[in-house]
Length: 436
Ligand code: ADP
Image (cartoon, rainbow, N blue to C red; front, side, top):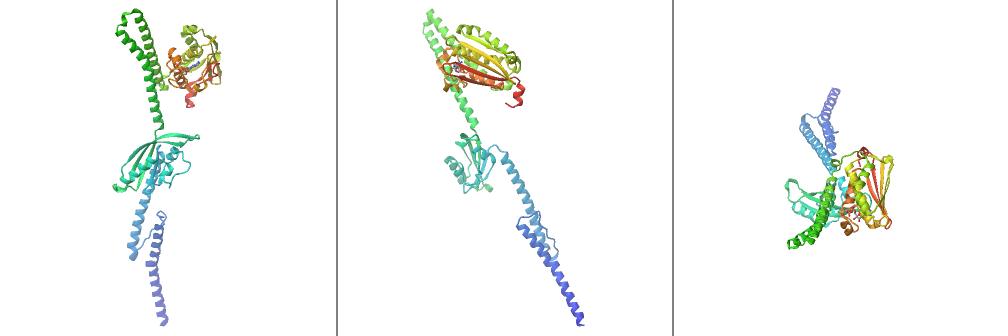
């Protein structure tokens, strides 16, 4: 009998133990494991608890929390990805600084823009960009939430070594949740406007040069008009002189306008140039013909060495004539000395033609040689003006040669003449395909 009771008791105990294990201990252990995984943010790998009875409710809650966290996690990953994608595709330098004034997020463009070798992450803004204007603007946005825009010029390490000046437009905006007044952080966007500023400076310089060049002939014409209006027109000698001077100055203004129009139209290379197979030697012969009376007036001796194989090229015939004409006119104007001689030679080397214009005049001082291709640069202003020069001839020549994919350089030992070297590609296809 006692054995029966014992067996019964063991059975009851085993049943209760099983019930305890399956209904309480196992769901509990599973829920614990799920919560542990949840705490360590392992949403994808976590086992989801399933339970009936006592733990049914809590297990359902854990599932819902886990689903919610999973979707939040996915959303954050997507947002992070698109933020990174946006930041890295921006040409502007971008960083985010928090209330401790330290940089917390940055894109690659910022490192390139500021020439930074190491990431500025977690460093104070003032340490990375040492400009009090930026610091003040940053403080203002952090204090009031109002966006700021400033312009600074700063020296940054150049990729090629040394330093370069960068003009930066900087926009600072607040990052504040729910339109809170005091932002938690600021977003700073740096636009590199160096090229734009240089272009503006060049335009200002050009405008002031053009005004200056126009002023003198206009003042002379005005002066003579006033003199004639005051009665001098009744004096035939005076009238003749006045008309002569006015005509000369009006011609100078026309030449200036022509040269300026040529330069501005040449700025659009492909639209303007008409490349076709040409005979360079024939173009030169035509140019020499046009300038024949000028050449004989200066008593300049022309020596020509132009072999047959250096003759054909793909070029804009009208523009090439302008190049030859400007270089020859300069040699006549400035290269005149005893026994003035101009040697013009050409040589074909592989797919290029090298043309040389070498005079035996006084040459060009070393310090001026680097500048003579700039607009309105003249070594002797009066000599150039007196000879009818506009100061634009060589910059037109350089623009045309470069638009052909070629180069022009000068070599001169003062007192021993000047030599201009023009290199032209024979085929324009090679120019375009090599991306020059
Ligand atoms: P310009 O209208 O004054 O001739 P260019 O641009 O053609 O303008 O030339 C710029 C300056 O370069 C000239 O004013 C002159 O001082 C100098 N120069 C050009 N060619 C020669 C040369 N062959 N010999 C000496 N100086 C020259």
